[in-house]
Image (cartoon, rainbow, N blue to C red):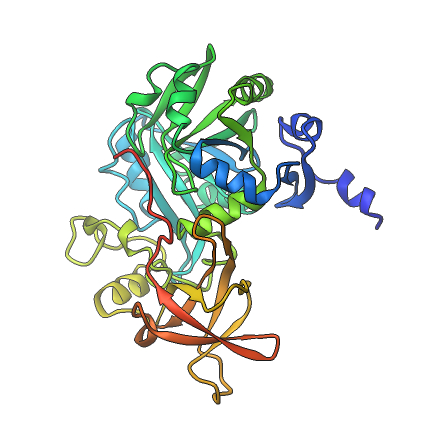
Length: 382
């Protein structure tokens, strides 16, 4: 198949023409033709987001409404709790929460955001998993809930310390929102869903907007001198500095939330002894790991020297051992700290900060130190 043929079958987001017009370097990603960078380059895009505000097209992600047939939001929340280890019932109107779909062995099918919109739940799921996620919801919750995929909406992320000031010109109440607030707001005169969240570690917003209004809003935001368009390259380096997982790399069906160092996302009410403990797929495995610990853990890693250590590199305990003890799952250069960073899995006995392990890189074993995450402090508005 010719390269042009491959491109022709890729899906396009409502902002595709804008990316091309602004010189975006387009690459295949999760079945979509997406910009990996613009003329400014990954490094400048990354640093600009940390210093001002970056605009990201995340329209390839799935947006799903989950509504109880009874009309009661409590029934939708309790239904979803069969599929995730999180407390959805306690999620207040106008708030959202990070969650994971788990399988029967406790592995992660996908990670997602869940918002309470008063009379229904609003879910944002990963692009590569969205069809399977929707099928999963329909298969297990169709008796009590209606699942609707919102294919008529784009999703735009505005991230960075100046994001609030920028968005205030288009949505005056945006600066009053707190981290993880979510709900309907008018942006640039258009009815949108807005959350104060994001995956960069910076303050920011995600804006769900009708497809036919997306380009006009993105263009208006980009006219602000503090805003630059940001591609997939800087998106990845920003989330890595923030210590955040990328599904299919740092977490997947073979990793549990406990192994993935996501214990913080499981509320006490769903743990052993809690009001609604267990009852979700893989709960026996996950609750046992919460109580007794997992055999391995996702950790932050800082390589010695300046060479980045990429995904898939094996990790060893010493210079002579032949059996790998772990693997790097994400790795690259952290522009904000001007040093290489990575994350990966190690036996829990070696997961303590300050522990040294060795990465096998081009026939040599490079020391790496287990380090706390995030690598760059978060800048959320609590």
